[in-house]
Amino acid sequence: MINFDNAATTFPKPLSVRRAAAGAIKSFGGNAGRGGHELAMRTSEALYSARETAAAFFGAAPENTVFTLNCTHALNMAIQGVMSEGGHIIISSMEHNSAARPAVALAMKKQVTLSVAEVFPDSERTLESFRRLIRSDTRAVICTIASNVTGQLLPYKEIGQLCRENGICFIADGAQACGIYDIKLSDGINILCTAGHKGLYGITGTGLLITDGQYPITPIMQGGTGSNSLSLFQPSILPDSLESGTPNVIGAVTVGAGIGFIGTYGMNRLRAHEERLCRLFIEGLEGTEGVTVYRDAAAEYAPIVSFNTEGFTSEAAAELLSERGFCLRAGYHCAALAHATLGTKGGTVRFAPSVFNTEEEVRKLVYNVKTLKNLPNS
Image (cartoon, rainbow, N blue to C red; front, top):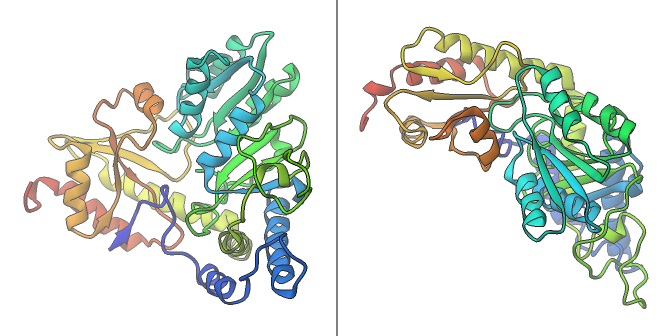
């Protein structure tokens, strides 16, 4: 089994991450922030250490670094929390449903007005799309840094600058970019939402919301935080206000370990390897009749490639390749807007390598894609 579905979640995990998970299960059995006994204190220290690691990685303060269930959870908290008092919101036409759906839901309830900025291969045209939609009541812009469908990189730094100039909160979805690119709040991002289980190599059930503290985030859930327990009102301080309930300490520890792995391996080296595998895949398919690769020479891309093969639905192609031992994602990738922008009515097959994939594995996949019509059951 060869996993090329790392944009959904990276697998395998680094040895250091697996060891961190096992160690956390063995040693951190207390409830962080809930108790002064040794077990609770030890667990609290482990959680805070992971928080410090994540904060430093993204150029944030530890108290402004919130652990979440996943990137979807983080985006919902950010979007609904910032827009709790209404106003105008702008999203891009390449957004994942985790950003698009909460924005549309708020608009359907008449709590906000919503605009969608069209994304082009040319970054200047994309930036102008956002600029043209800004109004006096625009409160937030939500933009993915890299598309989860094609890997297209959006001009997030320039969008951040545009938001700063207009006093608008910039919420960035870093699910497909964090861990591969050196993303920092200083890039002009007010709130960064990302997954812990993708490019950060943590386990599933992990995510991060990282804020510069400039824009208040009204909690969308309330509960026990281990602080201000005599009050019936949710604490206003971060991270407590956004971390109700028992935290996923084991998950947080693995995110910290995953960030440590990236630092040891080298982010530039990691990205170069994945980009090399994408080039090998694209070059291997060049000139193959009936194969369409969704890339444009005018755009920049993260190491993700979407393609289709004539005569097969994306699901059928992925199923045949799965029978040959290759794991690839097919369909719409939870990104309705992105596929509408691309015009891919039947979705695509997505190739997303990780640092643990090899050139030989890519060559095997290329051969099987090129000979898809000769595969059994085709």
